[in-house]
Length: 345
Ligand SMILES: Nc1ncnc2c1ncn2[C@@H]1O[C@H](COP(=O)(O)OP(=O)(O)OP(=O)(O)O)[C@@H](O)[C@H]1O
Ligand SMILES: [Mg+2]
Image (cartoon, rainbow, N blue to C red):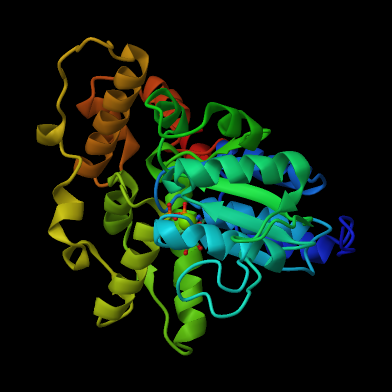
Protein backbone atom coordinates (compact mmCIF):
# COMPACT_ATOMS: atom_id res chain seq x y z
CA UNK A 1 0.00 0.00 0.00
CA UNK A 2 1.12 3.54 -0.68
CA UNK A 3 2.42 5.63 2.14
CA UNK A 4 0.25 8.66 2.73
CA UNK A 5 -0.28 11.36 5.26
CA UNK A 6 -0.32 10.15 8.82
CA UNK A 7 -3.74 9.93 10.36
CA UNK A 8 -2.48 12.11 13.15
CA UNK A 9 -2.02 14.96 10.70
CA UNK A 10 -4.74 17.18 12.11
CA UNK A 11 -4.68 19.82 9.37
CA UNK A 12 -5.16 17.19 6.73
CA UNK A 13 -7.97 15.59 8.62
CA UNK A 14 -9.85 18.80 9.12
CA UNK A 15 -9.63 19.64 5.40
CA UNK A 16 -11.25 16.34 4.49
CA UNK A 17 -13.82 16.70 7.22
CA UNK A 18 -14.69 20.23 6.23
CA UNK A 19 -15.86 18.90 2.87
CA UNK A 20 -18.54 17.06 4.81
CA UNK A 21 -20.54 19.91 6.29
CA UNK A 22 -23.09 19.15 8.97
CA UNK A 23 -23.67 19.07 12.68
CA UNK A 24 -26.76 16.89 12.78
CA UNK A 25 -26.01 13.86 14.92
CA UNK A 26 -26.29 11.48 11.96
CA UNK A 27 -23.55 13.46 10.18
CA UNK A 28 -21.39 13.57 13.31
CA UNK A 29 -21.69 9.78 13.50
CA UNK A 30 -20.90 9.48 9.80
CA UNK A 31 -17.77 11.56 10.26
CA UNK A 32 -16.56 9.27 13.04
CA UNK A 33 -17.33 6.22 10.91
CA UNK A 34 -15.48 7.69 7.91
CA UNK A 35 -12.43 8.22 10.06
CA UNK A 36 -12.56 4.69 11.40
CA UNK A 37 -12.90 2.99 8.00
CA UNK A 38 -10.26 5.27 6.46
CA UNK A 39 -7.72 3.61 8.72
CA UNK A 40 -8.53 0.24 7.11
CA UNK A 41 -8.69 -1.20 3.60
CA UNK A 42 -12.20 -2.57 4.09
CA UNK A 43 -14.60 -2.48 1.17
CA UNK A 44 -17.33 0.11 1.73
CA UNK A 45 -20.81 0.33 0.27
CA UNK A 46 -22.32 3.80 0.48
CA UNK A 47 -26.05 4.16 0.01
CA UNK A 48 -28.16 7.28 -0.08
CA UNK A 49 -30.49 9.20 -2.34
CA UNK A 50 -29.24 11.16 -5.30
CA UNK A 51 -27.24 14.22 -4.27
CA UNK A 52 -26.97 13.20 -0.63
CA UNK A 53 -23.16 13.19 -0.59
CA UNK A 54 -22.03 9.68 -1.49
CA UNK A 55 -19.05 10.88 -3.48
CA UNK A 56 -18.17 13.38 -0.76
CA UNK A 57 -17.98 10.50 1.72
CA UNK A 58 -15.98 8.29 -0.67
CA UNK A 59 -13.44 11.06 -1.25
CA UNK A 60 -13.19 11.77 2.47
CA UNK A 61 -12.41 8.11 3.14
CA UNK A 62 -9.70 8.18 0.49
CA UNK A 63 -8.24 11.48 1.66
CA UNK A 64 -8.05 10.32 5.26
CA UNK A 65 -6.49 6.99 4.32
CA UNK A 66 -2.88 6.02 3.84
CA UNK A 67 -3.68 5.90 0.10
CA UNK A 68 -4.31 9.65 -0.09
CA UNK A 69 -1.32 10.51 -2.25
CA UNK A 70 -2.30 7.93 -4.86
CA UNK A 71 -5.25 8.18 -7.24
CA UNK A 72 -8.92 8.32 -6.41
CA UNK A 73 -10.60 6.95 -9.52
CA UNK A 74 -14.36 7.48 -9.85
CA UNK A 75 -16.20 5.17 -12.24
CA UNK A 76 -19.84 5.88 -12.98
CA UNK A 77 -21.17 2.45 -13.90
CA UNK A 78 -24.40 3.98 -15.24
CA UNK A 79 -22.71 6.50 -17.52
CA UNK A 80 -20.38 4.12 -19.37
CA UNK A 81 -22.07 2.00 -22.07
CA UNK A 82 -22.40 -1.53 -20.74
CA UNK A 83 -20.35 -3.17 -23.47
CA UNK A 84 -17.47 -0.75 -22.84
CA UNK A 85 -17.54 -0.96 -19.07
CA UNK A 86 -15.54 -4.17 -18.82
CA UNK A 87 -12.59 -2.90 -20.87
CA UNK A 88 -12.79 0.51 -19.17
CA UNK A 89 -12.51 -1.16 -15.79
CA UNK A 90 -10.09 -3.94 -16.50
CA UNK A 91 -8.29 -2.82 -19.66
CA UNK A 92 -7.91 -4.82 -22.83
CA UNK A 93 -5.35 -6.54 -25.03
CA UNK A 94 -4.66 -5.48 -28.57
CA UNK A 95 -7.33 -6.87 -30.89
CA UNK A 96 -9.52 -8.00 -27.99
CA UNK A 97 -12.53 -6.62 -29.83
CA UNK A 98 -13.25 -4.63 -32.99
CA UNK A 99 -11.57 -1.27 -32.63
CA UNK A 100 -9.10 -2.33 -29.94
CA UNK A 101 -6.03 -1.28 -31.91
CA UNK A 102 -3.60 -1.31 -29.00
CA UNK A 103 -3.68 -2.70 -25.51
CA UNK A 104 -4.84 -0.47 -22.72
CA UNK A 105 -4.75 -0.38 -18.97
CA UNK A 106 -8.06 -0.13 -17.20
CA UNK A 107 -9.30 2.04 -14.38
CA UNK A 108 -8.42 -0.61 -11.82
CA UNK A 109 -4.77 -0.27 -12.81
CA UNK A 110 -5.08 3.50 -12.62
CA UNK A 111 -6.31 3.09 -9.05
CA UNK A 112 -3.43 0.79 -8.06
CA UNK A 113 -2.26 1.84 -4.62
CA UNK A 114 -5.24 4.18 -4.39
CA UNK A 115 -9.01 3.92 -4.34
CA UNK A 116 -11.53 3.03 -7.03
CA UNK A 117 -15.01 4.45 -6.54
CA UNK A 118 -17.66 2.36 -8.27
CA UNK A 119 -20.64 4.70 -8.43
CA UNK A 120 -24.13 3.42 -9.26
CA UNK A 121 -22.88 -0.12 -8.86
CA UNK A 122 -26.46 -1.41 -9.23
CA UNK A 123 -26.20 -0.62 -12.94
CA UNK A 124 -23.29 -3.00 -13.44
CA UNK A 125 -24.21 -5.89 -15.77
CA UNK A 126 -24.34 -9.33 -14.11
CA UNK A 127 -21.43 -10.66 -16.14
CA UNK A 128 -19.23 -7.87 -14.90
CA UNK A 129 -20.44 -8.36 -11.37
CA UNK A 130 -19.00 -11.88 -11.51
CA UNK A 131 -15.69 -10.48 -12.64
CA UNK A 132 -15.69 -7.85 -9.92
CA UNK A 133 -16.34 -10.52 -7.32
CA UNK A 134 -13.18 -12.29 -8.46
CA UNK A 135 -11.20 -9.07 -8.11
CA UNK A 136 -12.49 -8.70 -4.59
CA UNK A 137 -11.65 -12.26 -3.73
CA UNK A 138 -8.29 -12.72 -5.44
CA UNK A 139 -7.02 -9.16 -5.85
CA UNK A 140 -6.25 -9.71 -9.55
CA UNK A 141 -7.66 -8.23 -12.75
CA UNK A 142 -7.76 -9.85 -16.16
CA UNK A 143 -7.84 -7.45 -19.12
CA UNK A 144 -10.37 -8.24 -21.86
CA UNK A 145 -8.85 -10.69 -24.36
CA UNK A 146 -6.03 -11.64 -22.02
CA UNK A 147 -5.37 -14.85 -20.14
CA UNK A 148 -2.90 -13.16 -17.84
CA UNK A 149 -4.09 -11.90 -14.51
CA UNK A 150 -2.37 -8.92 -12.91
CA UNK A 151 -2.34 -8.14 -9.24
CA UNK A 152 -3.94 -4.82 -8.27
CA UNK A 153 -4.08 -3.16 -4.92
CA UNK A 154 -7.06 -0.83 -5.20
CA UNK A 155 -9.35 -0.11 -2.32
CA UNK A 156 -12.93 -0.50 -3.48
CA UNK A 157 -15.67 1.88 -2.44
CA UNK A 158 -19.03 1.32 -4.10
CA UNK A 159 -22.14 3.47 -4.05
CA UNK A 160 -25.76 3.10 -4.99
CA UNK A 161 -28.84 5.25 -4.75
CA UNK A 162 -31.07 2.30 -5.51
CA UNK A 163 -31.86 -0.31 -2.91
CA UNK A 164 -29.45 -3.08 -3.84
CA UNK A 165 -31.20 -5.65 -1.66
CA UNK A 166 -34.32 -5.24 -3.80
CA UNK A 167 -32.15 -5.70 -6.89
CA UNK A 168 -30.76 -8.87 -5.31
CA UNK A 169 -34.28 -10.19 -4.72
CA UNK A 170 -35.23 -9.41 -8.32
CA UNK A 171 -32.14 -11.17 -9.64
CA UNK A 172 -30.48 -8.03 -11.02
CA UNK A 173 -27.65 -8.00 -8.51
CA UNK A 174 -25.55 -10.88 -7.22
CA UNK A 175 -26.17 -11.64 -3.58
CA UNK A 176 -22.60 -12.82 -2.94
CA UNK A 177 -21.23 -9.58 -4.39
CA UNK A 178 -23.68 -7.55 -2.33
CA UNK A 179 -22.42 -9.06 0.93
CA UNK A 180 -18.81 -8.88 -0.21
CA UNK A 181 -19.19 -5.16 -0.97
CA UNK A 182 -20.90 -4.09 2.16
CA UNK A 183 -18.21 -5.11 4.60
CA UNK A 184 -18.81 -1.64 5.96
CA UNK A 185 -22.20 -0.26 4.93
CA UNK A 186 -22.56 3.51 5.16
CA UNK A 187 -25.99 5.04 4.75
CA UNK A 188 -26.39 8.77 4.23
CA UNK A 189 -29.79 10.04 5.32
CA UNK A 190 -31.65 12.35 2.92
CA UNK A 191 -31.41 16.06 3.68
CA UNK A 192 -35.06 16.23 4.80
CA UNK A 193 -34.14 13.93 7.71
CA UNK A 194 -31.42 16.32 8.89
CA UNK A 195 -33.06 19.66 8.25
CA UNK A 196 -31.19 21.31 11.10
CA UNK A 197 -28.13 21.29 8.82
CA UNK A 198 -29.85 23.30 6.08
CA UNK A 199 -28.90 26.75 7.46
CA UNK A 200 -25.32 25.56 7.92
CA UNK A 201 -25.14 24.22 4.37
CA UNK A 202 -26.71 27.41 3.00
CA UNK A 203 -24.03 29.44 4.79
CA UNK A 204 -21.32 27.10 3.48
CA UNK A 205 -22.50 27.46 -0.12
CA UNK A 206 -22.93 31.24 0.29
CA UNK A 207 -19.37 31.36 1.53
CA UNK A 208 -18.18 29.61 -1.60
CA UNK A 209 -20.09 32.15 -3.69
CA UNK A 210 -18.41 34.96 -1.71
CA UNK A 211 -15.07 33.52 -2.68
CA UNK A 212 -16.12 33.29 -6.29
CA UNK A 213 -17.59 36.80 -6.37
CA UNK A 214 -15.32 38.84 -4.09
CA UNK A 215 -16.76 42.04 -2.70
CA UNK A 216 -20.32 40.74 -2.69
CA UNK A 217 -22.25 39.44 0.28
CA UNK A 218 -25.69 38.00 0.95
CA UNK A 219 -27.92 37.17 3.84
CA UNK A 220 -31.03 35.00 3.82
CA UNK A 221 -34.13 36.47 5.46
CA UNK A 222 -35.58 34.48 8.33
CA UNK A 223 -38.77 33.77 6.38
CA UNK A 224 -36.89 32.58 3.31
CA UNK A 225 -34.80 30.34 5.56
CA UNK A 226 -37.94 28.76 7.00
CA UNK A 227 -39.01 27.92 3.44
CA UNK A 228 -35.61 26.44 2.64
CA UNK A 229 -35.86 24.58 5.90
CA UNK A 230 -39.24 23.03 5.24
CA UNK A 231 -38.80 22.09 1.61
CA UNK A 232 -38.21 18.36 1.13
CA UNK A 233 -35.16 18.61 -1.20
CA UNK A 234 -35.70 15.51 -3.34
CA UNK A 235 -32.34 16.28 -4.97
CA UNK A 236 -30.78 16.63 -1.51
CA UNK A 237 -27.59 18.64 -0.94
CA UNK A 238 -26.92 19.01 -4.67
CA UNK A 239 -30.33 20.60 -5.18
CA UNK A 240 -29.70 22.96 -2.25
CA UNK A 241 -26.26 23.85 -3.61
CA UNK A 242 -27.71 24.70 -7.02
CA UNK A 243 -30.53 26.64 -5.39
CA UNK A 244 -28.12 28.81 -3.40
CA UNK A 245 -26.16 29.56 -6.55
CA UNK A 246 -29.34 30.45 -8.41
CA UNK A 247 -30.58 32.69 -5.59
CA UNK A 248 -27.28 34.54 -5.48
CA UNK A 249 -27.45 35.14 -9.21
CA UNK A 250 -31.07 36.32 -9.04
CA UNK A 251 -30.52 38.48 -5.98
CA UNK A 252 -30.30 42.16 -6.89
CA UNK A 253 -29.28 43.51 -3.51
CA UNK A 254 -27.82 41.52 -0.66
CA UNK A 255 -30.92 40.03 0.96
CA UNK A 256 -32.27 36.73 -0.26
CA UNK A 257 -35.96 36.92 0.57
CA UNK A 258 -39.08 34.81 -0.08
CA UNK A 259 -40.16 36.45 -3.38
CA UNK A 260 -36.89 35.25 -4.86
CA UNK A 261 -37.68 31.62 -4.10
CA UNK A 262 -39.27 29.50 -6.83
CA UNK A 263 -42.97 29.09 -6.16
CA UNK A 264 -42.81 25.30 -6.08
CA UNK A 265 -40.37 25.55 -3.20
CA UNK A 266 -42.68 27.85 -1.26
CA UNK A 267 -45.83 25.81 -1.84
CA UNK A 268 -44.38 22.30 -1.78
CA UNK A 269 -44.78 20.34 1.40
CA UNK A 270 -48.02 22.12 2.24
CA UNK A 271 -50.68 20.16 4.05
CA UNK A 272 -52.71 19.79 0.86
CA UNK A 273 -49.86 17.80 -0.65
CA UNK A 274 -49.74 15.29 2.14
CA UNK A 275 -51.35 12.06 1.22
CA UNK A 276 -52.22 10.79 4.65
CA UNK A 277 -53.68 7.42 3.85
CA UNK A 278 -52.02 5.58 0.96
CA UNK A 279 -53.31 2.10 0.20
CA UNK A 280 -52.04 -0.51 2.59
CA UNK A 281 -51.06 -2.86 -0.22
CA UNK A 282 -49.87 -6.43 0.12
CA UNK A 283 -46.52 -5.57 1.60
CA UNK A 284 -48.06 -3.38 4.28
CA UNK A 285 -46.61 -0.07 5.43
CA UNK A 286 -44.22 1.20 8.04
CA UNK A 287 -46.69 3.03 10.26
CA UNK A 288 -44.08 4.48 12.62
CA UNK A 289 -42.13 5.98 9.71
CA UNK A 290 -45.32 7.36 8.21
CA UNK A 291 -46.37 8.97 11.48
CA UNK A 292 -42.90 10.51 11.85
CA UNK A 293 -43.09 11.83 8.31
CA UNK A 294 -46.51 13.36 8.86
CA UNK A 295 -45.38 14.87 12.15
CA UNK A 296 -42.36 16.40 10.45
CA UNK A 297 -44.48 17.85 7.68
CA UNK A 298 -47.01 19.36 10.08
CA UNK A 299 -44.26 20.87 12.18
CA UNK A 300 -42.71 22.41 9.10
CA UNK A 301 -46.04 23.68 7.93
CA UNK A 302 -46.72 25.28 11.31
CA UNK A 303 -43.27 26.89 11.36
CA UNK A 304 -43.85 28.20 7.89
CA UNK A 305 -47.23 29.69 8.74
CA UNK A 306 -45.86 31.30 11.86
CA UNK A 307 -42.81 32.69 10.09
CA UNK A 308 -40.53 30.62 12.29
CA UNK A 309 -42.10 31.67 15.58
CA UNK A 310 -42.10 28.53 17.67
CA UNK A 311 -44.61 29.74 20.25
CA UNK A 312 -47.13 30.42 17.50
CA UNK A 313 -46.28 27.19 15.67
CA UNK A 314 -46.89 25.16 18.83
CA UNK A 315 -50.26 26.87 19.22
CA UNK A 316 -51.22 26.05 15.61
CA UNK A 317 -50.60 22.39 16.36
CA UNK A 318 -52.37 22.45 19.72
CA UNK A 319 -49.15 21.51 21.48
CA UNK A 320 -47.48 22.83 24.59
CA UNK A 321 -44.31 24.77 23.80
CA UNK A 322 -42.15 22.18 25.58
CA UNK A 323 -43.75 19.24 23.74
CA UNK A 324 -43.30 21.10 20.47
CA UNK A 325 -39.61 21.71 21.18
CA UNK A 326 -39.07 18.06 22.06
CA UNK A 327 -40.63 17.09 18.73
CA UNK A 328 -38.46 19.60 16.88
CA UNK A 329 -35.37 17.99 18.32
CA UNK A 330 -36.59 14.50 17.55
CA UNK A 331 -37.30 15.17 13.90
CA UNK A 332 -33.99 16.92 13.41
CA UNK A 333 -35.37 20.42 12.95
CA UNK A 334 -33.28 21.62 15.86
CA UNK A 335 -29.90 20.21 16.70
CA UNK A 336 -29.27 19.65 20.41
CA UNK A 337 -27.24 22.51 21.85
CA UNK A 338 -27.90 24.79 18.88
CA UNK A 339 -28.75 28.46 19.24
CA UNK A 340 -32.33 27.59 18.34
CA UNK A 341 -32.55 25.14 21.16
CA UNK A 342 -31.13 27.65 23.59
CA UNK A 343 -33.85 30.08 22.44
CA UNK A 344 -36.28 27.66 23.97
CA UNK A 345 -34.87 27.80 27.43
N1 LIG B 1 -22.37 17.21 3.71
C1 LIG B 1 -22.02 17.95 2.67
N2 LIG B 1 -21.30 19.07 2.84
C2 LIG B 1 -20.97 19.85 1.79
N3 LIG B 1 -21.26 19.59 0.53
C3 LIG B 1 -21.98 18.48 0.28
C4 LIG B 1 -22.38 17.61 1.34
N4 LIG B 1 -23.07 16.59 0.80
C5 LIG B 1 -23.10 16.82 -0.51
N5 LIG B 1 -22.45 17.94 -0.84
C6 LIG B 1 -22.32 18.54 -2.18
O1 LIG B 1 -23.50 18.21 -2.89
C7 LIG B 1 -23.22 17.77 -4.21
C8 LIG B 1 -23.67 16.34 -4.37
O2 LIG B 1 -22.87 15.48 -3.59
P1 LIG B 1 -22.36 14.06 -4.15
O3 LIG B 1 -21.92 14.20 -5.57
O4 LIG B 1 -21.40 13.50 -3.18
O5 LIG B 1 -23.75 13.28 -4.09
P2 LIG B 1 -24.08 11.79 -4.56
O6 LIG B 1 -24.79 11.14 -3.44
O7 LIG B 1 -22.83 11.15 -5.08
O8 LIG B 1 -25.10 12.08 -5.74
P3 LIG B 1 -25.53 11.11 -6.99
O9 LIG B 1 -26.35 10.00 -6.42
O10 LIG B 1 -26.36 12.02 -7.83
O11 LIG B 1 -24.27 10.66 -7.63
C9 LIG B 1 -21.71 17.93 -4.38
O12 LIG B 1 -21.44 19.16 -5.01
C10 LIG B 1 -21.17 17.93 -2.97
O13 LIG B 1 -20.01 18.68 -2.87
MG1 LIG C 1 -22.40 10.50 -7.03
